[in-house]
Image 1 (cartoon, rainbow, N blue to C red):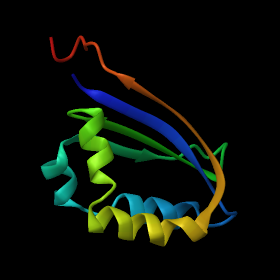
Image 2: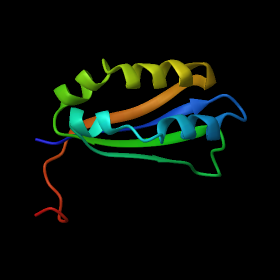
Image 3: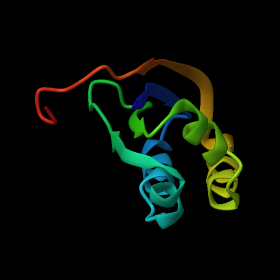
Length: 100
């Protein structure tokens, strides 16, 4: 069953685009780890927030990806740019009208 992780990351003022750049770097290891979709976005009405939407083959695949060196390096690089304000939801996807 597909696992979804959808959330927001608060950024320090003026660092949102830097966080987006870190999160959108090409990383083939994510696909190999079971990532089906990883989308990063912004809303100009919330200038210190980054939105992230992830789909994974399973919750276990998502958890295991956090041990990848490339993921750990990206997290370490982004952490000083974050405000600590985070929110989100995680859930098992039951279906989609796009995938049948």
